[in-house]
Length: 97
Picture 1 (tube, rainbow, N blue to C red):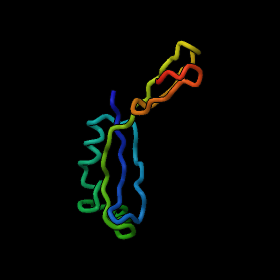
Picture 2 (picture 1 turned 90 degrees about the horizontal axis):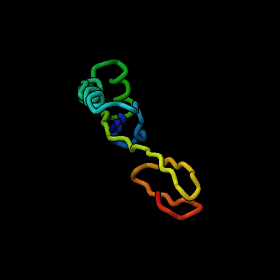
Picture 3 (picture 1 turned 120 degrees about the horizontal axis):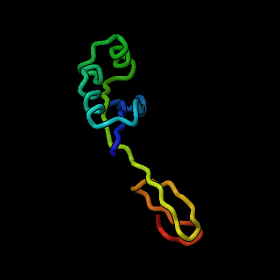
Picture 4 (picture 1 turned 180 degrees about the vertical axis):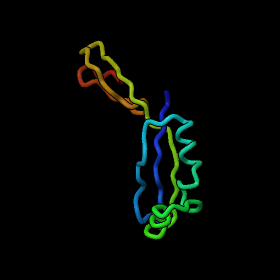
């Protein structure tokens, strides 16, 4: 199952992006980001207004998280955890995970 993370991004680069939440379903991530309080252009809470005054325009966005998968190598019976986007070679046999 694909999970999603929420990241707060700042337009002018005053702050680097901040990871807000992880492990969400697509529905949860979309619900979070559709809330008016998750963008400086629509937020009205005192905390959001203060954030905008201090750091400039910002918004929350979501993205799919990289899933990890385990791979068992038969040559050494080792279990490797790897991101599916990254391939890694076993140190004993050289086989790509």
